[in-house]
Image (cartoon, rainbow, N blue to C red; front, side, top):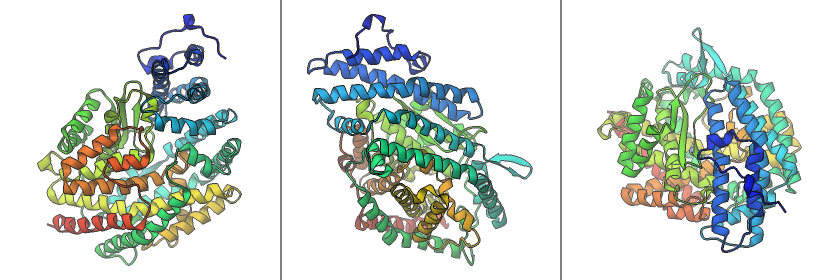
Length: 577
Ligand SMILES: [Zn+2]
C-alpha cells in the first residue's frame, strides 16, 4: 500500500504545458496520493474528479508534445522532448493508471454514467501486463521510424524538391503523361524505401506478437479486439462485412471506373487515371490562402448548424488550427482532443485542393465531437469508440455538401459543387473495397504469425486481396507497385486493425445523411445529441441515437449504395451545364 504524503504534494498546474516540465517524482506523488486515499460511496465522486484531472493533464501534455513534433519533424529537439516525456512520464504513468483502475474496480462502486467506462476499464485491466510497458514504448518508437521514412519522402519535380502532397496534386492534371510521371515518381520513391519499410514491418510484427503472448492472448488480433474495446462485434462480423462489400460495392465501384474509362476515352484505366477529372477539366481550386479556407469552412458549418459554426470560429480565434502544408510537417491530417482544456486541435497539410476542403469538413466533425461532449465531467467518459468517432466526421462531410456553393458562403459555383460532390460520393464507393483489402490483410497477417513474418508472403497476400476487391483497373507491368501497396497504408503501421472503423462509420454516416434528406434539422439534432454522449453508451446505442444502425450486412450496405448511385445521377445532370 502506498504511503500518503500529501504534505509534499505540489498542487497540479493550471495547464498541461506546465506539467510537461515537471519531474516524474512530483507527478508520481499525485498518483500515490490517489492510491492511498480511502475509496467508498462517500468519496468516490471527489476521487474520480481528482484522478480525471491528473490524467487529463498527463494526457494533454503528451498530445501537445506530439502536435509540436508533427508540426516540425526536422526539429530534433521536439522529437527528443516527446521521447523524453514518453519514457520518463507517460509510460510510468500508465503503470499507476493501472493501479487506480484496479482500485476502482476492486471497490465494486458503480458511479453514475460509469457503466460503459467501467466495462472498458475492466477489459483494459484484464489486458494489462507490466512486461508489456517497455514493449509498447518500443512500438511507439517504431511508429516514429515509419513517420520519419515517409516524412523524408521528397522528389525532384522540374528542378525543385517537392513534398508528396504537392506531387499527388499532379495526379489531377489532364495531361496523362504528367500524371503517369508523377505516379511513377512517387512509387519509385516508395520502392527505394522498400527495404527499410520491410525491415520495420518485421520488427513491428514480432513485437506485436510478443505483446499479445505476454497478455495471454491467442494472437495479436485477439489482443487488438480487446485493446480496441470491440465488445459489440466480432472478427466474423468483419468477414461478413467484407463479403457484403464484395457482393454489393465492388460491382458499383466497377461501374464508376468503367464510366471514367469511357469518359477519358481510354482502352484501359491505369492507377494514375483515378484523380483526374473525367472530362479533362482543370483541377478545382476552391481556395488559395488558408484564411480563405477557414472563412468559407466557417460559413458552411454555420449553415449546417449555428452552434457548430460557433465551435469552429472558437478554434480559429484560440489558434487551434494549423492547416497549411509546409516542408517538415508530418504527413496527413488529424484532429486531437486536448483533454484538460476540453478543446480540439486540427492539423492538416492544405495545398488548395478540393481534397483539403473534404479533409477540413471531416476533421471539423471530430472537433465538434469534442465540443459536444466537453461537459461530461470525467475523462473516462470521453473515450469515444472509433467506430462512432468517424460517424461524427464522415457525417459532417455529407451534411455540409448542400452548402458548398458560393451562394451559401462556400467554395464553388453550382456545377463545381456538383462536380466535387460526385467525386466525394464516388470516393465513398471506391473506399469500401480498399478498406476491405486493408482490413482483410491485417486479419490474415495477425492470425498467421509464421507466414506474415515473411514480407514476400505479405506482398503476395496483399496482391491476392487486391484482385478480389478491385476490378476494372489495369495494373499490368506494375506488379511490384501493386503488391507493396500495404507499405503505403499508414494505419497498418500506426494503428493495427484501426480501419474497419472507417468502413462501418461510413455506412453509419450515409444513414445520417439519408435522414437529413428527409428532415435536416432533426437529423442534425440527433447527430449532435449522439455526439454529446461521448463514450457513455454502448456503440450500438450511439449509432441508434444518431439515427443509424451499426451494420455489416449486404442489405443495409446495398441501400446505402443505391442512395449514392441515385444521387450521383442527379448530380451528373447538374455538373454538365
Ligand atoms: Zn477521422
